[in-house]
Length: 133
Image 1: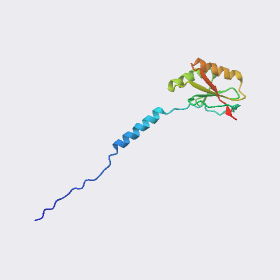
Image 2: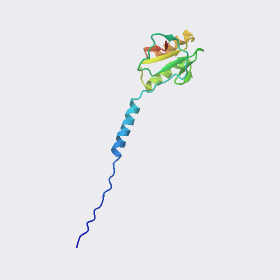
Image 3: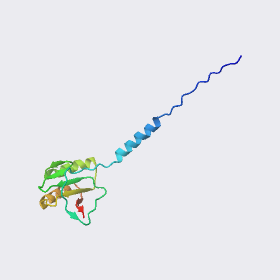
Image 4: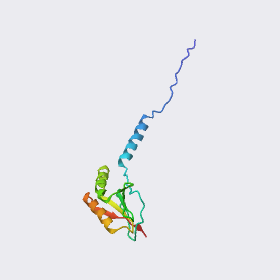
């Protein structure tokens, strides 16, 4: 009498757990290493310059309009509160340079007041934005 051997077929399955672990680790890596730029929130008419360059590690921008309004982190602020807002942004993401985007018709005194507030916040590198020719 022939004996029937019953062979159980195993279902082949791919274990997705290691791949998901790697994907989540990469996601965390990219989130942690990403630099978030703090835009001023308004576009100003910058003066032209033939030697204009953009610093590579700039991530904080302050805009000054023609009317003397100061914009930082996408909202209008008072000149006297630039230091406090800058210190808050520096606590979130340290930076060694701040870009001042002053309109070409902005009053010189407002620009100097903003630069004084930046210096008072402990930042020594201030760049004035210009558009390249």
